[in-house]
Image 1 (tube, rainbow, N blue to C red):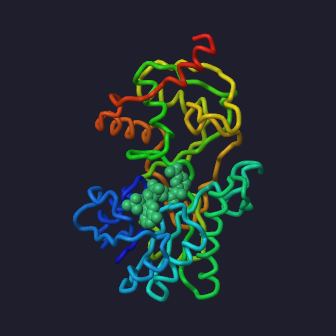
Image 2: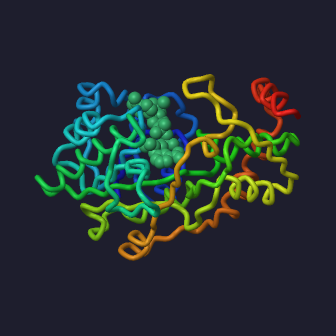
Length: 320
Ligand SMILES: NC(=O)c1ccc[n+]([C@@H]2O[C@H](COP(=O)([O-])OP(=O)(O)OC[C@H]3O[C@@H](n4cnc5c(N)ncnc54)[C@H](OP(=O)(O)O)[C@@H]3O)[C@@H](O)[C@H]2O)c1
């Protein structure tokens, strides 16, 4: 298949390009051209800022693709998704939109399935993703464009740009304690980036997925503290958790790792993607953390400079 994706040179996009080229697809990416070295030679790059809709139209004028995967969050608004679909009007076989589990109303009881009402619980990010989803679904309903909405939750794995797991690696390998704001009992659910990429590759051109949305994540829910304990077990380092008050709202960004900070459960069902498409993850949470830790060590990230001064001040205040 000829597949076009937005992005392709960061975390999710890099793994998606790997999965697509492995499966023999002809891959083109559209991005601003900042990290060309991250792409294999077989991948064609169209350099364009997706926020510049006139430039996007010119750049994509000659393109005809079997599949489009909109990955890059720029931050991408509903208008940006419309502009991308307009620029390829009539020349796309199947469009996938990478949304997020954060479209769901997280004030509701867990677990969140695909029919959980979408709200602005997660603010601007949710607003943009809901608008992007709706832009795709409108085309599906009005013009029959085959579209699929993909909703990942916390993604972990090599090259992660968020501090889901590397935050804890950074402290555990240096023998540092982990500050714990609150009781640490909120549930989280992580998915491995390769499983996400494989799931999207497996959906391409699949009619059963047209007009549908799918949660794509791992199978295990774990508390915040359980996640940190699992990481310490996997990397075989002793763990010291130091309770500490949560940071004041609007204050300086505090060193807690993003998963220890927010106060709600984040648990999602995966029965729809399993049942309808037969897609399930390869990685358990422990196996995904272990594979990511190998990458972390290989890259020498255990030796990088990190400023722990804010954290040290909090530890002193906590009597350590
Ligand atoms: N990580 C998670 O835990 C998580 C969870 C749920 C959903 N998601 C979603 O998964 C996707 C993550 O994608 P990602 O890891 O590949 O990172 P990303 O930050 O969404 O995208 C980065 C890529 O997009 C390109 N890009 C950025 N701004 C651009 C622009 N204005 N015009 C054209 N290209 C642009 C970048 O290349 P250039 O800089 O060269 O332009 C790069 O290739 C997002 O949609 C995110 O919302 C992530």
